[in-house]
Image (cartoon, rainbow, N blue to C red; front, side, top):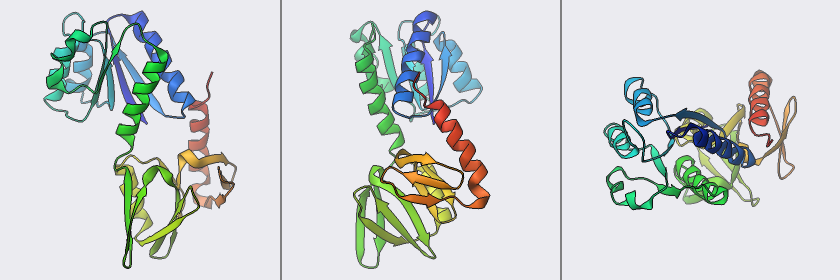
Length: 243
């Protein structure tokens, strides 16, 4: 899930902007959690005083009290990773904003296609972690596109990798270690069984005890994970219904 902040002193605009982001995220089956702030001071309070973290911040530049440039400078003192996208009426601020390393500028009025393009680019950069998955088995070393991995299956000390093009690879490892590695890299894989880690983007359907992938492959959910996987899937479906 991406944690997103929207900071703009035009509350009506901020509300519409949030609706646009939610619509795009549902269309692309991306989980987001949005918070809306009316000025930089409110945003800084949540981040600097309350310790809240955001993956992505959409922020106006011209705001009362603390503007978007000063707010970003304060954020950058403790956080170099948060991605900043300025939503502004003037591109002329681009040079002034250079020192806070914004990812992009979006010019008002907002074009939905442009917002979609920038949001998806930001999403890819934020979530891809390493774009590739390195694995080694005996004398073979493979460099695999993470996004093309459908699922992992463990067999004792060997983990098999199943790709979207039908290819398979393997490496020595433990499933618990792999699960933790994928979490750290923000790769969206679900543990449905002691032996399976599944890329959620390839899930077509989940029933009581089975996961059906988009290539029609069926994987079984272990008894002790049925409830958790079922609840997670219900939340996933609910959050990604395009209204």
